[in-house]
Length: 417
Image (cartoon, rainbow, N blue to C red; front, top):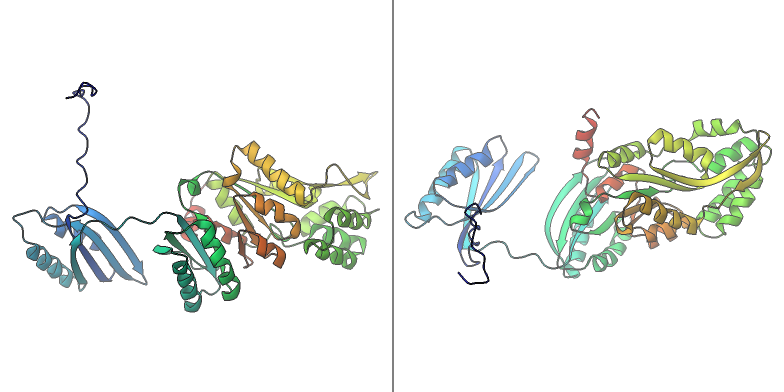
């Protein structure tokens, strides 16, 4: 023992044996056929008689058919590989399964640098679109290491684990495919950060809810069409948001404050909104909303949905009537990004671990500030600028972009909180 090495304590465990060399002989055992309980246990019970070590396992069941792959070391000296092959084939035939055993050396080849998750949402997901996506991944130098389904409804969602190319390069290459093929594609970096606690902040009007709140107020003031026209121009980025806000709010002057309760009752949540928030909260995420709408509605949503943060503009009320003005700082395009940073600081979550969801031009700064910006049924200018787009009317599909499966959501819903 060299002087630089301290003596080993009697209680110290022995270090594990080093892994076998990459040239060590291995066997790839593949089993496929009709699935039933006990196949996996049966295969490894059969292999155990030959004292082999397990190097890797992969098992997939699709429409009741199993494909089970086991990469194991070759039998120890004194036991013939032929005996193992014969025994495995005999066991498989007894269960009406097929077996294939391939000799080789070493483990799987190392995955390439640059690892990403590519989530694809289709309604439906066609063979044509899947082929185009796979081809585009290959064209960037990426390799598809694994594919699995996240959900089968309300959309088909699948995830590709890709290595060998950068996340940004992959995102740039796949964005045109999404638009052309009518699917939604999200590309995020792989790694521990994907499993870390996150903050999710979303817009309210036409995102968390199906309505534009100011239009609901305007309907009670008899000027809905006029307000809707200005709102649409602002969301497309054709008008300055603050100026358009003041112009629209002025039309509400004189409304009795009792209209607030009526508007709250008229608000319709977007399909999947409750599921999204409930699931995120169960995972320990913090959830907030920022809105160019009004605190008179967002404060109510915060209480009803158990949100952690909420910020919006505030309608001025004097003597029980709306004055047609807003008070305090305006929540506009820049304000939404500023609030995202503030919420993240309060939550103790780095910006890289934030997710922002929105649909309008005034959401763009927020979407680009977040670690992942999701354009939800958004205007073209927003879809083009966001990290990814979701173009189906179900807000809980955002969960799939975070690697959460429909089965996990339903299992959690089946438990008593």
